[in-house]
Length: 86
Ligand SMILES: [Zn+2]
Image 1 (cartoon, helix red, strand yellow):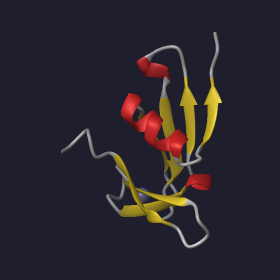
Image 2 (image 1 turned 135 degrees about the vertical axis):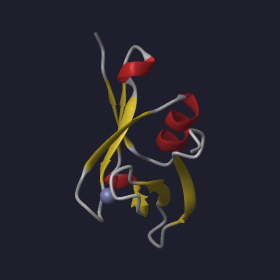
Image 3 (image 1 turned 60 degrees about the vertical axis):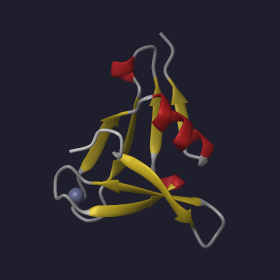
Image 4 (image 1 turned 180 degrees about the vertical axis):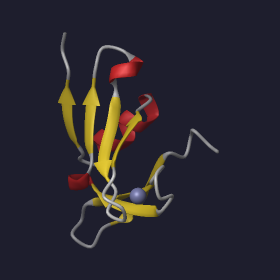
């Protein structure tokens, strides 16, 4: 299991957007997600900074912690970001 490769940027999508490659922890499918399919929430601590998506294979809502590197990757790819302020 690799924590570093939770989510990676794949090739650019045919419309110009970036595709992200992730794995579903529930059904273990390797899936590709557009920026629109992902949400990023940035909170005040590591516990409240996470990204989420719904697995297109099994429909499970997935939420995973987002480290600095993932935050950069997702924001750079145009993923909608919600800043949680306390
Ligand atoms: Zn799944």
